[in-house]
Length: 142
Image (cartoon, rainbow, N blue to C red; front, top):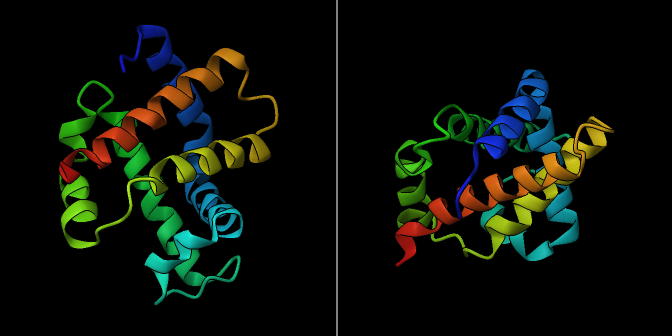
């Protein structure tokens, strides 16, 4: 999955708009994922999973920080997320199917918080980018 120069430009633009409150979008994405895909809750049994809980907010910030790190290192996402990939694969053993679910919910949350930001080409670029992040995060499963 190759990100073109246009894709990278779109991703950086979206992130520049989203970044100031990316933690809120991350928390919203997690809340949406837990509501729509109940099996994802199994990895968070120790969390308070009510919308707006401190646990959801804290983890939403971590999700957003990881995405921000990937944006900042868009030409070397694998290097930037190497430790996170290892953590998810070897320690937490998160089912790889969950990453696309969270990516989709993150896109929905961006759209909900920023109506009109995700035009067709921008949405495609963000989808490719988040898909690439998911591939990187599951690369250590093999």
